[in-house]
Image (tube, rainbow over all chains, first blue to last red; front, side):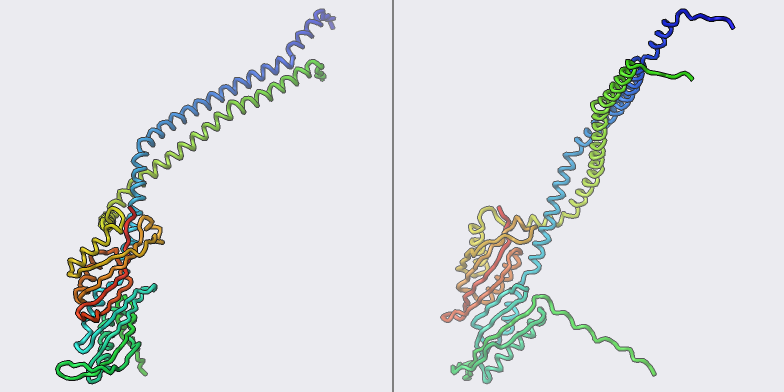
Amino acid sequence: MALHLNLLHEEILEQRQRQRDPLKIGIMVLCFVGVLMVLYYMWNGYQALGIRSRLNQVQADWSKVEPNVTAAQKRSAELNSIISTTKVLDGMIDDRFFWGPFLEKLSRCVALNAQITSVDGTVLENNRVSVAIEGLAAGREPRAAAEELRQLLLEQLGQSYSDVKVEFKVLEDLDTIVKIGGGNMAMARFGLGVTFNPGAAKPTPPPAHTKISRP
Amino acid sequence: MKRFKLTKDQIQKGGLSVIGFIVLIYVYFSFFLGPLNSSRSSMRTTIEDIQSKLANSKNEMIKATNLEKQASNATTRFAALKALSQEGAPIAWFPPRTKAFFANQAIDKTTTRLEGSVPFKEPDLSSWMRYNWLIDLPQADFSALGTAVAALENAEPLLSIGKITIRALPDDPQFQQVSLSASTAILKR
C-alpha cells in the first residue's frame, strides 16, 4: 500500500467547516422558505385583487338597484299598513248597529191607541243592544193594548235580530180616561225592556230524519 | 461511522438560525398573510350579503308590484275614508257639518258637543283618534228623525251611535227631544 501524505490537511478541514457552517445553511434555508412565502403571498394577493374587483362590480350593481328596492320596500310597507288599517276600519263599520231600521220597526209597531213617551237605547259592550221604552196605551183593555204592542215588537224585531227579548218592566193602570174615536177609554202606563243581538236570526235547522230499521 | 460533532460556535449559529426562522414565520403570518386572508374573507362575506340582497331585491320588486295590484281597492277605500276627516281640529268642522246635515233633513236646532277623544287600542289605527260627541236635537219629528239617523249612518261610515234617547215633548207631542251619543274615527292631522 502506497503511503499517502495529506499536506493540506488543515486547509481542507477549514474548507469543510466553512461548507458546514450552520449559520450559512440556516440563511440559505431561510432565504428559500422566504421566497416560497413571498410567492404564496403574491398568489393570495392576486386572488384578493380578483375578489376586490368582483366586490366592486357587485357593489356597483347594488348601488344601481338599491334606490328602487328601497322605494319598493317603503311602498310595500305603506300598502300593507293601508290594507290592515282599511281592514280594521271596515270591521268597525260592519260591526256598527244601525238605529235607522230599528226606529222604523218601532214606529210600525205603535198602534193608534198607544203612545211612546220615551226611548232609551244603548249598544252594550258585548255588542248587544238594550232599549228601554216607556209609553201609554189606551183602550177598553189598556193592558191588552200594551201586550199587543209587546207582541208586535217581539215579532218585528225577531225578523231582523237574534235573541230578542221584550219584557214588561212596568205595566199599571191609570185613573185618567181619554176619548178615542168618540168613546171613553181607560189608560195604562207601560215600560218595556228590549234586548237583542244585532246579528240576523239564524234559521232553525230542519228536523233530522231518523232512519227506521225494518224488522 | 464518522461522528458528527458540532462546535459551540456552530450550535450558537444554528440556534440563531432557528430563532430567525421563528421570527420570520411570526412576522409573515401576523403582518402579511393574516391581514390579507381576513380582508379576503370579509370581502367574500360582503359579496355574499350583497348577492343575497340582489336576489331578494328582485322578489321585493315583484312583491311590491303584485301588492300594488291587490291593494288598489284598499287604497281607493282608504282614500275615501281619509277624505271624511277634514283639515283642522275636529271641533271646528264636525259640529257645523252635523248641523248642516240635520238641517238638510228638516231638523233644525242641532247642538253638537265634544265629550272627549281617545286613541284607538288597535296598533293599525295609531294615526286615528276616536272622538265622542253628544248631538242634541231639541225638536225633531219622529219620522224625520228616523230618516235622518238612517241617512247619517249611511253618509258617515266612521260614525257609530252608541246611545240614543228620545223623549216626547209634553207641550208639543208631535215633536221629540232627541239626544245621540256618537263616536267617530278621525284621522290625526
